[in-house]
Amino acid sequence: MLADDLICLVESQPPVDLNRLGEHLPYDWIENTVQATGVASIRRRRLPAQQVVWLVIALALYRHQSISEVVDELDLALPARDASFVSKSAVTQARQRTGAAPLAWLLRESASNWAAQDQAQYQFKGFSLYAMDGTTLRTADSAANRDHSGAPACVHGRVGSYPQLRAVTLTAIPTHLVRDVEFGPYDINEMPSAGKLIPRVPENSITVFDRGFLSAQILCNLVAGGQNRHFIIPAKSNTCWDVVTGQPGDQMVRMRVSPQARRKCPGLPEFWQARAVLSVDARGRQRTLLTSLTDRRRFKPADIVACYERRWQIETSYHELKQSMLGMELTLRSQTVEGVYQEVWGTLIAYNLIRLEIAKAALEARCAPEALSFIRAFHTIQYEMTWAAATRSYGKLPALLTRLRERLKQLPNEKRPGRCCARAVKSRPFRYTVRYLKRDLN
Image 1 (tube, rainbow, N blue to C red):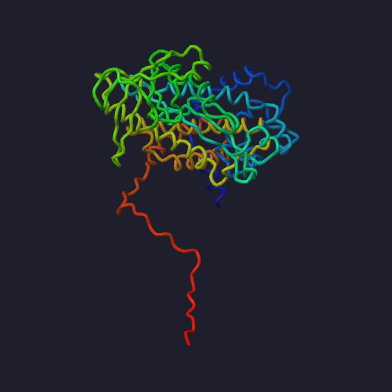
Image 2 (cartoon, helix red, strand yellow):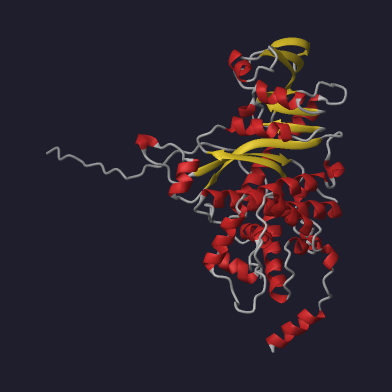
């Protein structure tokens, strides 16, 4: 019957190549993670620190399932003679013992390695393209999360609905890989987090910023802190400068550093220069882009405008990370501060794993990574990993992602048709009908 057919199907599959199990996340990385952060398990447990790392990554891939279901279905616990399943309390204690430090260490090590893979295929005139921007993450409404993270202010002194974390990410524009990230409470501005990320920006790169990051401290430290590190950022409406050289539309300008900024960072110069390029979008709106790419022969104004227009892709990565992967569950699972950070680091690693496979599949298909559908690839990985774990317990998650590459190439994004009518402001209907009473004139 059906069971016999399934057994025949499983037995007919070729054996797994064990050499490919650690292609993306080698076992040595996991060992180095727990050793470097000092959370290696001395006792023999069913969920040692190494397995907890896999568990946290898997929780991001299966947000719609409970933690116990993920442990059981993916067979993440080590086998034992006297127990067939792991209790919920044991899983919670294992996560608490491990903490967030191993996941943070693993994200930065893996992201730097993965971003370097196939880097030459996605460069722009010898430079890697990155985008830096901020976002927020909604956490569970617990007393610990509210005290640590804070919440948006509401009118009349009311308390915000959910605590939130504020994050600033450095994302590779062509592949959407999250290269690095900094977190902080909601009440803290994005600028301190961006300042911590600036020293970790790779060399030979171009970083595109939103206008909210227009600061001499950030931009000057970016250029002076490494070799061939450049920026592109739109000017604000109140930005003032003096024209040094050039023609209208492409000029070298000089701006004064405020005394407040120089007091905070004494190493800043009194003036700093940038190239101002005038751009016009599809709606006819003008925008001035400031950049440190001063070589007019190598970088024409059209090249700078084209680089900045790709900045919107970081918003797409936020949508994939916060909505596509979380589904309808917009709030993180964890009730504690350490658990929230652990969950966020694991989610970023899982997202990078999916994006890495999409990038490699796009190279084989000879198309851009954004041409492949993230949500369809994400669902395919979910189903294939569940089936593989049910038939054959491989024990390591990234091995299954490589086997899906051929299928990912068959999942292009479906282009939506263009707008068939012009935008128009429609009249707002009345909320209630109005009854007019006729007076008796007799």
